[in-house]
Structures are given as C-alpha cells and as structure tokens.
Image 1 (cartoon, one colour):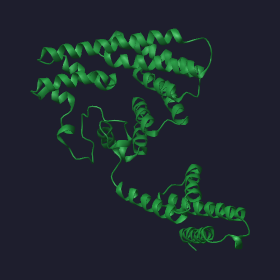
Image 2: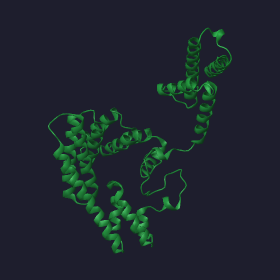
Image 3: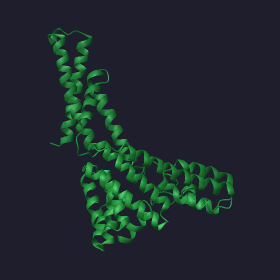
Image 4: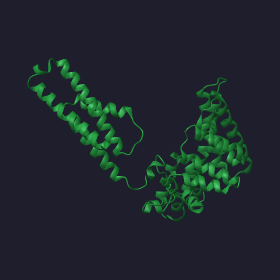
Amino acid sequence: MPLKFILWAGVALSSVLQCVLLAALVADLSWLGSPLIWLLVHILLSAVGAFCSGRLLTIEAKEKKQFPNFYILLFSFALFIPFAGIAATAISMFYGFRESHIRHREPDYWKLTPRAELPFTTPKGRKATKVDSRGFTEHLMYSKNDDDLYRKVLAAANIRTSLSVTALKQAMRHRDERIRLTAYKTLDRKVTDLNKQIQLLEEQVSSGDNRENSNTWLQIASNYWELLTLEKGEKVAREQLLKKAAHAAIQAVSILPSNRNAHFVLGRVSLMQGEVDRATIALERCHTLGMPDDKVFPQLAEAAFMRRDYPKVKELLNKLDPATRAYPPLSHVAEFWT
C-alpha cells in the first residue's frame, strides 16, 4: 500500500475522531468517562495527525531530512486549535507547499547573494532590463546625467570596498569635478577607516587562545584583504598587504583550527601569493568544515588551474549548482571548461 495513501488515511481518521471528540465536548462527556480521558485522547489524535501531516508535507516538498520543530508546530496547531484541527492544518499546509513548489520553476538567482549591489552583467536566464544591461561603470562612461551619477558615487560609499572600488576608480577619471573629488574622497576615507579598524583590532588581541581572538585575527585579515582591493595596482603595497593578511589568517587558524572562515581567507590570500599547495590545503579544510560548494569550488578550480591540473578544473566546475554556474563572471569560465 502506498505510503501517501496510509498517511492521508491517518489524517482523515484522526480528523474524524477529533470531530467526534468535539461533539462530545459540546454535548455530553459522560460516555468518555472523564474530561481527563477526553484530553488524553485529544493529545493522542493530535500527535498522530501532526505526524501524518508532517510526513506528507516533507514528501510533497521533496525533503529527505526530517525537521522536529516542524512536527512540533503542526502538533501545536492540531492541539490548541480544535475548531481548525488536524484536517484544516493538513489541507492548508499541503496546498500551500504544493503551490509554492509550482511557482519556483526558474533558477533561484536570489539565493547567491543577499543583495545585488550595482549589477555589472545580466545573469543567464534573466531577461535583460535597462538597469541590468547598463552597470555602474557603463553609466560612468556613457551617461550624460551628471547629477544622477553624483548621487550614485555618494551611495557607493556604503557598499563593500571589494564591490565598489572598480567603479570608484572609474569615477576618479570622470569629466565632472564633483564626481572625481567625491570618488577620491570616498576611496581615501575607506583606506583610512580600514587602517583605523586594523589598529583597533590589533590592540584588542590578547594572548589567550579562544574563539574571540581567532575571529579578531580573521577580521584583521579581512580588512587587509579589503585594503588589497584598493592598492592592487601598487606592486610593493600589494606584496606587503598579502603578507600581513596571510599572517593574520594563519594566527586565526592556529588559535581555532575549526574556524572555517579563517581557512577560506587564508586560501584566497595564498592563491594571490602563488602558494598553491597551502591554498589548496586551506580551501579543502574549510570545505570539510562546512563552507558551501559555491564559495570553495571556484577557488579550488583556480588552484587546480595554477597547478595545470586541467581535468580537476573541469571536475570542480561541473560540481557547482547550475544557478551558480549561470551567474557572471563565473558563467563565462564555466562555459569555456564545459
């Protein structure tokens, strides 16, 4: 007998019996013996109905993992809302799951980033709009609306340095003096703020071995990484910043070997230093500790490319989720290797 049929039968039977209990509550409880028996039967039926409903919903959502909190939620509905009860809970939840599953047929690009800051290229599968097809740097090159560009340069001050530095450096070459000066001041302020943060963090680091110290070193390494995006054109500064970032990341890892973010930063910095073996070890370690595939595999593919292990590059890129591979600039690399 199919599992879904058994589960639906369990929902139906517990719902019918719950209706009988409700009728007994309204009419006369004498045939049940006592209110305590009524309550115990109601709890038992609610538990059976919640379990059957939960299994049906997880099957409908194609989830292999079971979530205890979800069963507790369904049990609470069935127990404390007797007028809605098991039937209403199961039917409403089932059709809600079913409709939400039908709606999501396209790749979920929104899962890749918390927000889309200044889009530069339209992802595959998404219809190109006026905003998507003309990124911020293109606005700086072609737009004639200087007031609009000035506001965008001001807004770029609130965007992470690694995302805004290219556009701000482009703005420093703009014909409008307001835009040039604003971009220059914004970059200068970002450098000053990062250096101040590094100095404060270094003063906070103590000699103890704990999670807080590890995260402090990790933040120092991340700040050096942000500075690197601002100074990547200067060879001497680049080498010094990479060296300091690597030192801070190594400190974070040595204090707390389970700090996966520290391993990830160490891997990225090591790649830029040309330390391929160290980068590979760090990236594989952070992946073992739970870092998502879409963050680690592109970096490991770059390390494999630097080792000239081209079959490994193709293997790693093919392991990525299709939505991740479809998002530029990785989409161009993945298309070449596939």
